[in-house]
Image (cartoon, rainbow, N blue to C red; front, side, top):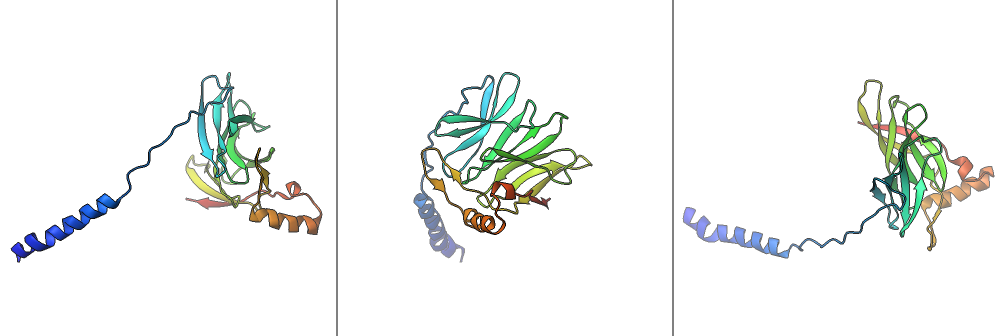
Length: 207
């Protein structure tokens, strides 16, 4: 039996494994492009990118840390109006909504949502020691973390009540979303602009 296994079975196993490995495509080569905000003094860090190739991150200016949006090489500074010395952009979705965090004048850490230049503070109700938003998807769902009263870090998922509005990509067409269609219906019924109907997110804890 041992001779049969060694002479018949093992060659089949190793032969099949070798054939499988040979069929696996080799790793793709990567092309690297340096991303530096023209206003940076001490460095730039890219944190997120969407399907349109727009990049967000932050750079160190002269004494300040500022968020940025890079659209085809055109850089726009992203600073929350309530931010003092520090705003960091972490994520961007297909609609162009940007999330991140900032420190306010009291030294508190707050998350933010930037919808076409309109900033909304994102703070988990349990995040008494700080909240930061790290990512946002095409449905407008936001993920991040907060620090509770015991000093523990917790993840969160925030789902917006009102869908995302469309975003015009410079040099391109407006990106449509399901949220756009739903928002039109909301405007017809209550006769308010989409921006006035953006509600604060409902927070769902993810531990």
